[in-house]
Image 1: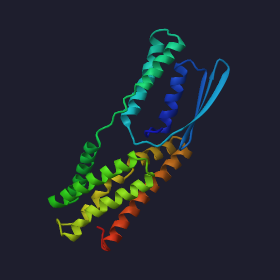
Image 2: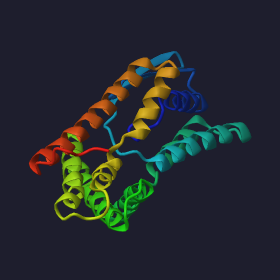
Image 3: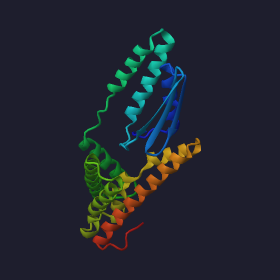
Image 4: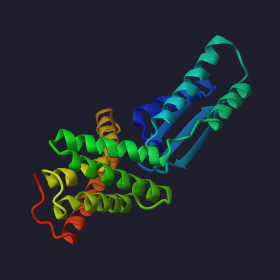
Length: 244
């Protein structure tokens, strides 16, 4: 849940893992910021609630968790093993999850390149593309820094959009390239929350309406925050004619 998995995947993996470890029944209830799990084993019912602190999306971790569940099920099917040994094996596998991420500078370079590619595809000249690359790179480094220091995600979106728009809007003042609007628009593309938006729609369609609506509202608030940052930059620079 913390790294952006669909609700249906979370519930399915939870139930499969519990049954593979010898539980009689597993029930999972999801909220936007918490997960409640009830297991029944040997006529004993245990319920626990855990917070799900929002982290950056990490598909690599989600794949590793799926592989652990699959391996646990395969171990049960292939050879008889005591519940204690199987639990120890699964616990150690979760403890050894590879949580390494790409270096911030490398991520920023690729994000800046993607923003620059959008600018070029929209008809921007090479100078517009270069400014967009710099704006996207600096904005992504700012976003990573603020997220690392646990700033509110909405404040992070506002500051990131402000810095990206500020750098992109320099094309107006220095008369760089053929269309300054392209640089401003492409510099903030890194703030589009496409993955959470897709997940929210998927959750709603699959019956997890509460968490789907929660994710959708969170996504819309991030988009609104980015718009606030863009407007702040344009008002500060007194640019009134921005737009395609």
